[in-house]
Length: 249
Image (tube, rainbow, N blue to C red; front, side, top):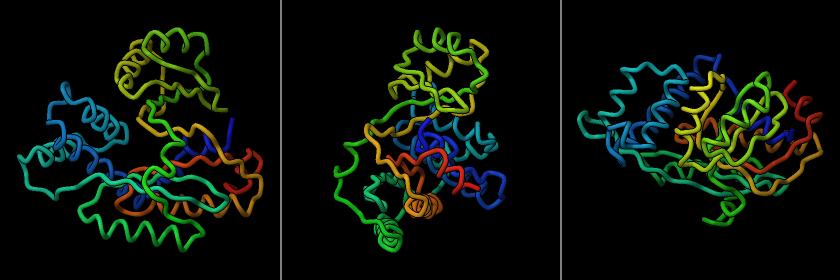
């Protein structure tokens, strides 16, 4: 298991805190709105909306709240118009970072993201300078209590490319278009899973074996993740288990 995988899976989980829960809800609702605006409000015909709808439900966002977000996206209800924008940059130690945002003010968001980078030992990069180090994938995580053979036989027929040992869980990796099919196959087999989403996986990693360097990288990740317009933050650091556990403690 790599430190990066563990950290990416836990996603700085602060869900127990009311403030963090409220932020998460706001970000998920915004994603639903944009998906409905760009592809229509029918979840059966709009694969992106179907994914975002389910992601919001998995996070316990109330159904009526999600449905209102869909209507705002399709124009049935008034709402703020958001646009998707992404930024690329580097954290300390040369760690590559991609920041995905939904914003109603591109200039404000860009300025705030740049400030977070520059004040915390990082730097912004030109579009494409970092993204080539990542691949968009569908990822479903399941508990390690699921027998590997059983999981493999279920997911490989549903389009999975790989099943990876992520320490405390199995990580099923597939092409983005196969997320819904893969999820349905896992549910039909009665296999429990903790998350199912589209994400960016690094094709190469930067190993960090120094605690101070690890703290700087993780601090920058937290600050970016806490910015209101940020939906996702992806990075390619690989922190050793021993250092990661010490930092988390």
